[in-house]
Amino acid sequence: MSAISERVRALFKQGDDVRDAGLATPDDVIRHDDLIYGSDEKWQRLDLYRPRRDEGKDLPVIVSIHGGGWVYGDKERYQYYCMSLAQRGFAVVNFTYRLAPEFKWPSPLEDTNLVMSWVLENAQEYHLDTKHLFAVGDSAGGHMLALYIDFLTNPEYAAQFAFRAPAGMSLQAAALNCGVYDMPEHLDEKDMTGLLMKDFLKDGGTPEELRMISPIRHMTDQFVPCFVMSATDDFLSSQLPGMVQALIAHHVPFEAHFYGTAENRLPHVFHCNMRSEDARICNDDECAYFRRFC
Image 1 (spheres, rainbow, N blue to C red):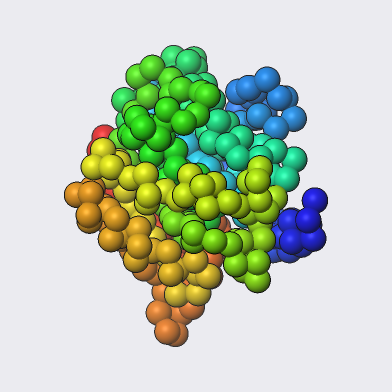
Image 2: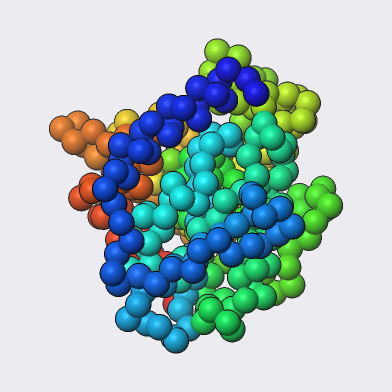
């Protein structure tokens, strides 16, 4: 493992430990933990959260793809954020996927696809309304979600992979939070993203590989409606304008939100901090957006 991946894992864990210290499962949430969605029982696990008040009722579904720079993160780090979405009236799927450098691209995309298959196959048992299926992703998870939407909606792009989307798979809308939507033609080895690509991509980040993982380069007019957001101190905020321009160019319905002010600076993925009023507002906005499609 490279020094940058080790550093990211250590720093991100330290920040997440502080953010989530003292949090617990809310009394109004039912959780189903450590359900296996693939053949690798270590990496391919998911949790499902539902609001207790709606036990036995078919609910619209949100699948969450966690962030972590392609090298860090798991469902445990996103449990409190995802349970907060469940409290808003959704069944929420929170999964761990295979990370770099242990696994290379397209492992997380394949895992996302396996999770979607699991949702369709287990809809009856867990009372999931798969006609109203949504997804959220932030940072590297937002990048992966945008690529997965390309995979679902661009047949030429999908044909480049050995796996196929499950029959009947369709997202109604998505939320892309503080994500990466385009890659440079050549890596900047002084940039954190560029360094992480060395661990993420099999050949270390060739121009062909970088184009392959640039979501806006594979977007079509079939890309799903989406809510895209960034914030004042999001270090990936420069990615937002390009995504907005691509959505406009392809006539894709969307809402773009920019949170925070000069007096109230908000960091990258601020919406995952369950103690933050700004996070509550953002997550309310996103869930309200999804309800328009229900």
